[in-house]
Length: 212
Image 1 (cartoon, rainbow, N blue to C red):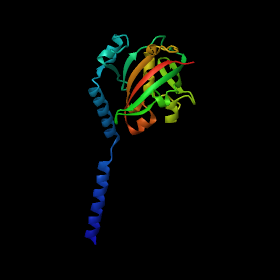
Image 2 (image 1 turned 45 degrees about the vertical axis):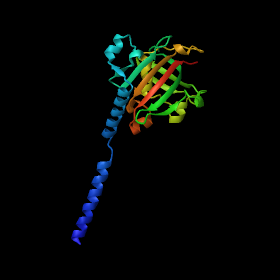
Image 3 (image 1 turned 90 degrees about the horizontal axis):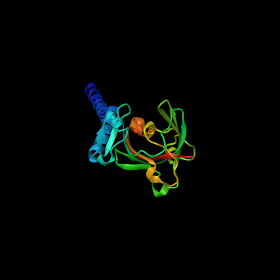
Image 4 (image 1 turned 30 degrees about the vertical axis):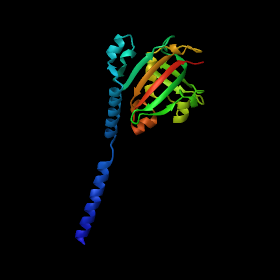
């Protein structure tokens, strides 16, 4: 009887240990996220530049060299495809912004959401962005955002607000070539709540201009 009980307890212990050893930790997920970002950088021949180089280039990235600047504090990578005309959002100023976007999960290389496709082409996401002493805060306008509707949120993810310190904003009817355009690699911690909870990074392509 004792031998049988010991054998049973040993089997239970092995099962518990095996279950624990197969459980993916947050650290494991972060390693996979880092690997996915590095893989994208390698596969896309991204030339990562430092913030010092970025600022020395008048806060621009050389698109012909496929440059992305890495912001160490946030882990966000940014390429400014077009800086845009108009002016930057000044401290204390709030601006209505119209945004077209495409969101790609870098873990699966799949498009998660986009209003830059035929199905949603009639929807241009509307948000309000405020500059408070160099820090940017954004809220989606209720009922006027595919992003907000899909993710059930009014808050703009921190990673998507990074460009506003460096791009120019203006209103345009059709001169799309002058509208600010950026690409972002956003780690989970600066992305959507779903990206954060599931620990996956996203590639974003955004066009941004002043709204009404």
